[in-house]
Each structure stands twice: as C-alpha cells, then as structure tokens.
Length: 220
Image 1: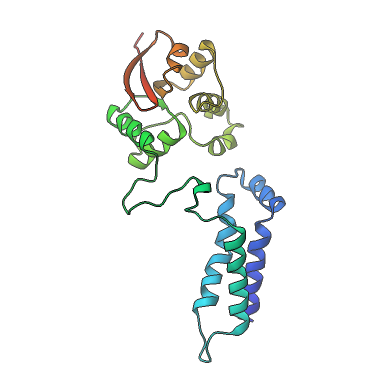
Image 2: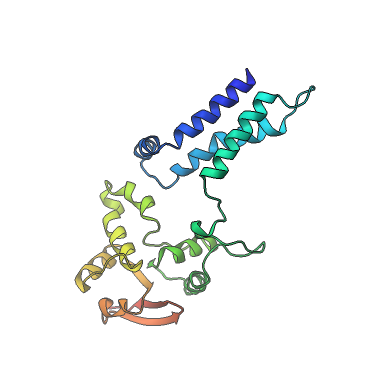
C-alpha cells in the first residue's frame, strides 16, 4: 500500500510537469512565477523516502525500482540548478548569489536611502530587497506585477512600463517616462547612462558605477 501511494505521488508529480497542466496552474494561481516549484514539491521527498527507508527485511524491491527510475528521469531529463545553462556558477559558501555589478549598485541605493520609490534593473532590485525591506522599488519581475493589472490603485501598467525601460526591453519618450515616474512618485532612477537624455533637466546625476548611472529628482 505504501509503495502504491508513493508511486502514485511520483506519477502525479510527473503529470504536473506537463506543459498544459502547468499552464492551467498558472491561470488558477494568477501567476507563473512559482509554478515551476510545484513539479518538485510532490516527487522529491517521496523519492528520498523510498530510497532511504529500509524495512526489517531490507529495502522493498518495488520501492527501490520506482525510486531509482523516477530519480533517473529527473537527472536525465532535467537541468541541474548549478548548470551554466541555468545562468548559475558554483561558488564558495557565503558568496552573494547576485552579479557583482548589481550588488555594487544595490549597496549604493541602500546607502543613499531615497525618500520615495526607486527605479532600477531587476537584478539590482533583487539585491536591494535582500539587503533591506525599507526601500520601495517601482517593480521587479513582470510575473509578480501582472496579477495586479486589474487594480487601478496598483498602477501596474506604469510599473511594467518603467521596469521594461530600465531593463532595456523598450524605449520611452521623455513624456512617457515623466508621466509614469510622477504617477509612482519615483525619486531615484538607476540605469543605463543613455537614460539621462530621456529623463531631462528635472533629474541630476548623483552616482555612476559599472553599467549604471543614478539620478535624483531635483525638487521643483
């Protein structure tokens, strides 16, 4: 009975990995930002249990076979978390799991402590959020913002617009940028040096490092 339950759970985990099923889960949950984790929640603990829990007569053959087969499927068909194709590298314990340039800019933003919201690249926002919870970013990953598009007070469309701009996914005119920045009460912008041409005279460059330049909003 225990073997059948474990095997059924592994099958459920494999079914959850099918694209049509994960698409449905994303619709139900309202976001796809964490759906991929569902694939691992069900089968992995059971695989460990089947392989590591012997009986008085030793490991049950069926459980061992199912566990090894499922584990082999994950290893052969999956991608290691530390794979270079996953944008990851192995590093010593205690190493920050962010790009060095992002960390440099993030530390400056934290020290600068803007009074209002700040606009920065997605990687910088992640590094700032790891350092402090006291600062308010314009946005982060699009998947975290899109579910709020139906709430006018969240200004999700403006957040997505500005985040795409600072991440280099699109360009804005001076008018488009000014309107969105004013709506969200943005006081600090950190991004590509060329963004200064769009920001205009109301913004003053206050710092530069790596790929980023930061501008403060000049009081009117």
